[in-house]
Structures are given as structure tokens and as C-alpha cells.
Length: 160
View 1 (cartoon, rainbow, N blue to C red):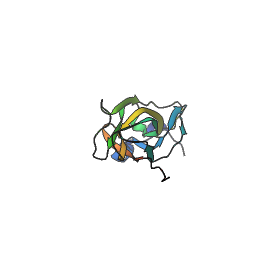
View 2: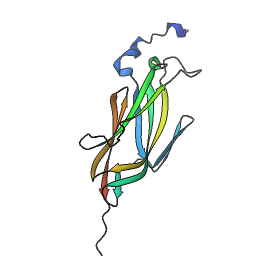
View 3: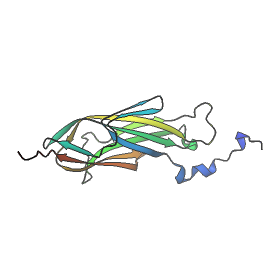
View 4: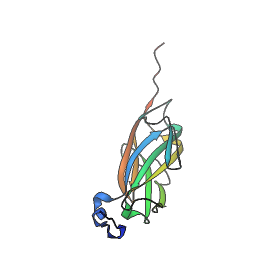
């Protein structure tokens, strides 16, 4: 069977099911994206314990991979990350972190294939006003696509 890439019909990939998405997102103590790979230190946690409230956590990170369909390559996109309390209020005084990007088609990539894009984001001196549930809301082009939920509690000391 001969295949001519010019005859490849990509119209099926234009449906909403084939929009950019987040393959995975993970909380970590540290994360680095390098050469298409994601390196994590202390990844996969869902609970922070602090000495008291209000608290500031020294550093935390998010590692993630965005999946871009072939038909979305070459288009400007925006990834947004916001830290919210359990009432939906933002803890970022300047609003969500916004990261604009555009993904091209790598040389030699088979036509119609998805393109993966890894990213790492580090947040320093994160404020937590009280114990409870928090979440990083992750949006692509202003549409929420994932929530990384976690809890923050005060250390409990054993009775002496």
C-alpha cells in the first residue's frame, strides 16, 4: 500500500476530542524539564505539614506534560497555573502564572502524530494562611484541564 502524506485527511483530528491536553501533572519538591524529559525530586506528595499558621512553604514544584495534537502545532497557546484555597480564592496576589508557547512540528515526526511538551514550574515561599485543602488549577487556553489537590496541616507533636 502506497501512502502519500498529501492524501492524509486530518479533518478527524479537528474535533474537540483532539484538543491540547495535560497528559499528567505531579507535585514535587523539585522539578526540572530538560531535553524532553522531566526530572523530579520528592514527587507525588499530597500533604504538607507546617509548624503553624500562617505558613510559608520554602519551595514546591509542578512537573507536567502537555499533549499537542498535530493540527494544533504552530498555534499560540497559553498554559496557566493558579494556586487556590478550598473556597476557590487565589493565593497568588498577581493572579495566575501565565506561560505562552507555540509548538512546531519536529523534523521527521510522522504526520498526524501528537507532540509532547514537558514543563516544570517552581514556586518559592508559598503562603498558606490556614490548614485545609488547596489545589493548583492548570488551564490550557483559559480552560481548566487539571487540578492538583493537596492538604496542608500543622505538625502534631507526641505527648511527653
